[in-house]
Image (tube, rainbow over all chains, first blue to last red; front, side, top):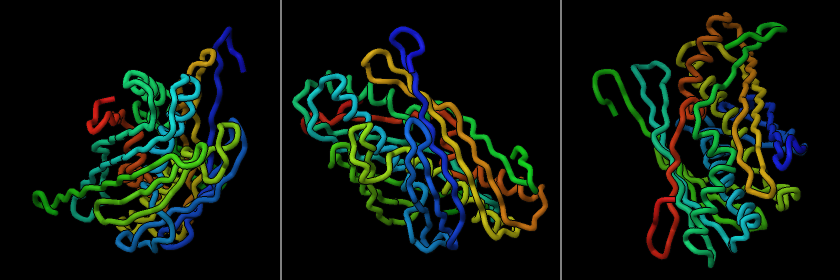
Length: 165
Length: 165
């Protein structure tokens, strides 16, 4: 929807309803709400070392696929807009976190580093390839999210009410 | 591996090899490298509005499932450690981004807000439930990542070399 002159804004909203099912399995109904409505049945699980049954990939595998897929989608979408020839994209990603545990306390985690190695099948100049990647980084929802510190709001259901958590 | 006294650290590393296949589809071989090796074949696609063929969920659906699944896994794992009775978890998540586009330029995106509504099937006191959620937030790899600003390193393949991108 045009806001002013040439500038358009659009919203992208996803929600999900997730419930624990197996020992560590979660069944997750993901719904794209904006700009279009579409639903996806997904599931996460953990391996036996984490008390699960490996019936689905773990949450961090989803995160990894999301990050790699998002930048690749933007690279391909923006190649068309920037008229940069592109026949294919390969990405190798590496995502590293560290956990710290004191005694038997619940552990505390932190990200260590994320890297993406990008290999474009293209006849474009290196400058155009770099320009394409720069645009894709700015358009990639997940990269833009990782680049800033975000507040995640939590509410806990208590009876029929919700309280801040 | 014990570092000193009672404190242990552990690494969690995922990598992936992803390649564009269909119009907007990406096939992604995700590999957990640490603490155990396991592989997962995953794929993302986009709907027709984005030039894809809807052969797999879009990247943001993976991101949504990853976020919801990660906090749910930690809630269940830490309930055991904290000896808080827990028979089930339901999470409703909402993830909101906004895009801005000038003319036909590639758009620029930004996160707007993330919220998680948590419903625990438990006989525990509200205080214990809040304590459990607080621990899960600190242990959730994805929430801890979202809470800080991260650098994602990019390299572009040029011939047989890699350059910063």
